[in-house]
Every structure is written in structure tokens, then in C-alpha cells.
Length: 269
Image 1 (tube, rainbow, N blue to C red):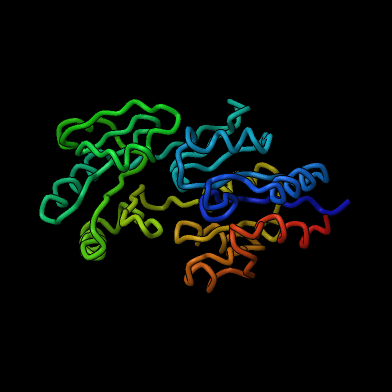
Image 2: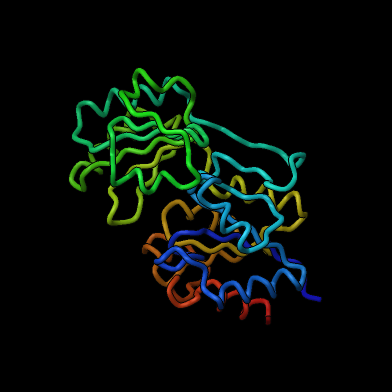
């Protein structure tokens, strides 16, 4: 029996094809890996409500990392621990105020499964409507009363870097910020010190698996810490250069079963 590995999967651009489905090959290899005693988990920027369908589709019984590490829990075991570390509501409101001097389309705050839109937004509603969250629309300065798990600023490409530079100058100590993949010009903000590696490490410690037997797959800048933490940090063929540069290895793209092919090869499945 091969030594147990912990396999951590990002969803969008990694496990999921561009049409947001899991390929037959990926599913088949994950089944085999689990049958051989390896542990498979999801680590995503998505909230739990829009990742739980994949959790159930893969028949997982492991913890899950959501909101890039701002929320980690075990859906089937309430005693495992419930790690929710939101962004201070005062910091969130300072950022909302600062945005008034920049051009932006919208600001969205997520307090776990409650979603607050600064402005009504048909385009983004589609993305956030998964799992029927409670949605509130209106000036976040008035409506946001709880500390948000995550704060998103949707802007134009030419404004993105200006806003990021401002956030770095003013709030670097208290926030982590990421940009979404094209075509969305979105800045995602969570509390500082949080990332997918933080949640993954909790799971690895729980299962007693050393970092060298952790295999993690990702494609975007929110996967960097997780890939650095894992003994096998694997970039997808479609990953951004920054991720490929720090990864230990690169596999095929998310459209070519990159996850399944790599796992099958690594674990001789």
C-alpha cells in the first residue's frame, strides 16, 4: 500500500473544466485514489454554498477550505472545528469609503452566505446566486453591519492597479488582496494572514500527513501559498506564469484532465 497522500484541489480552472463540470477521467482517478486510502479535499475561493455540489459529487468526507482560507470546516463532522475569520467591518467600511474616489462598477461583501451588493448588478448576481444566498442591495456604508468573510471590488482594467496600490499603501497590514482571472476585473479582499495554505495545513495536521506528502493543484494567484506549502505543488497547464514559476511541476490544462493525469502518474493508479 502506497503511503497516504493528501490531495488538495482548487476548483475553477483546475479540477473543473471551463464549463464548470468535472471530467469523467478526473472523477475516475479521484475515486481510485480514495479507494487506495489517499485523502482528497477541495480548497477554493468560492463560498461553501457554491462548492458543496462538487463536494457531494466526489463523495468527499473531508474538511473543505472556502473563501481562500477565510472559512474552513468539515461538512460531515461538526466537531472537527469551524474556522471563520472575517475582515474587520471597520476596515471593510474604510475600503468602501476609499473606493468612492476611484471608478468602480460594484462592491460586494459576503458575510458567509449573506451577500451585500453596493449597487444592483444583473451580471454579477448570476455568479453569486448559487445556493440561494440572502441578497441585500444598497450603500454598504449603511447596510453592512457584520464583519465580511470577503469583500470584492469589481472595476475596470485601468483602475484595478490604482485601487490595489491604494489598498497596499493604506491597508497592507490588515488585508490580503487578489485579482480574479480575466475577463473579470475583480479585487478580492480577505483578512490578512489567511490563504488556502492555512486551511490545508489544518487538514494535513489533522490527518497526520507531512507537507512532503501533500499534493496541491492550482492555477491562480490565490493558489500560490498552497502550492508552496505542498511537497507536490502542481501548476495547471493553463495557470498564470507566477504560479508556474513557484510550482514544483506543471501538468496539462483543466480542459485536458490535468489533475487526473498527474495524480494517476504520481500514485501509480
